[in-house]
Image (cartoon, rainbow, N blue to C red):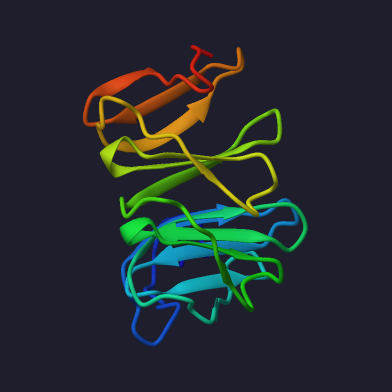
Length: 173
């Protein structure tokens, strides 16, 4: 933590065990979420000044978190595990993914769809605000570390193959 613009820093753990933190994401209302290893997840309702440990639906590592509309949030990670909460992470429901691949990154698309990507060329697509996902594995099976949507509406993927366009619905975007 710094209070002098970064001139000095102090270490302040956010939890008792302080496991590796993998991703931080901000909801539209400013709430922050952290995905961490060993089934740990956290939420901050005050801009990161304090953190609440969320009840975990899984003991394996989480690599990504994606806030949705209202109080909904997705949490995902090892072995294709994906969970959805409708109450800011107080309770979780498992979402079937059809894969055991590691899930690494999630993205809101301009059209309202959600995309989650991961190892083994895994791409999950949701058109119902994360209530369900369709598995769309990439034929090259190369790991997808992250994906983004450009201003032109193209999807770009980055991973072990470099950076290139990501086909969705069988067409280049």
